[in-house]
Amino acid sequence: MKTVLSLSIAGVLLVASSAFAAGPRTDEVTQRDVNQQQRIEQGLQSGQLNTKEAGQLEREQAKIDRTEARDLKNGKLSPAEQAQINRMQNKASGDIYRDKHNAATGNPASASSQRMQADVQRDVNQQQRIANGEKSGALTNREAGSLERGQSHVDAREAKAARNGRVSAREQAGIQKSENHQSQRIYRKKHNAKIS
Image (cartoon, rainbow, N blue to C red; front, side):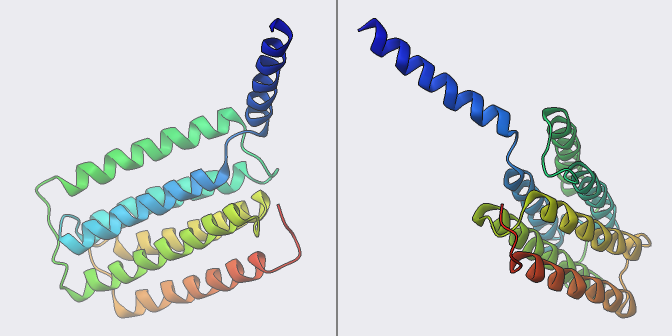
């Protein structure tokens, strides 16, 4: 009886230690990126966020994406890197909440807000495609990191366009060009021969 119990405990410890050794799951990190982008999009749609606030939040998302890209260059996240990303995402989450619940409001029907909404919705879609690729094994961690770097460029363009509180049609055209390039990169990386 003691032998069976000892073997059972050893098996549980072996599974737990191998899961810990594998490190944090990057698809969970990317899923949180999706969630943050969805909250920004919802804030724009409801008028709880104005275009300028959304731009500031996108700047913060760009910073998080750059950190993820840098940390995934070697194909894995260390516990310290995961902790740093979690802190950054927690701060971003608080900033989204604060901006959605302050006195500033946006006009979701304005052309500028509509442009920003479309761009942020595309961010949601791109991040979801990356997360799905990680979950299915179609993307390696290194590929996901490279794609996060691309997402940071798109987020930075959105932030720059919205810094004055409005996004022009010309600015949106530039953002869409970056988004199209990123979409092609996601497709290529998901459909190459590399698997995780």
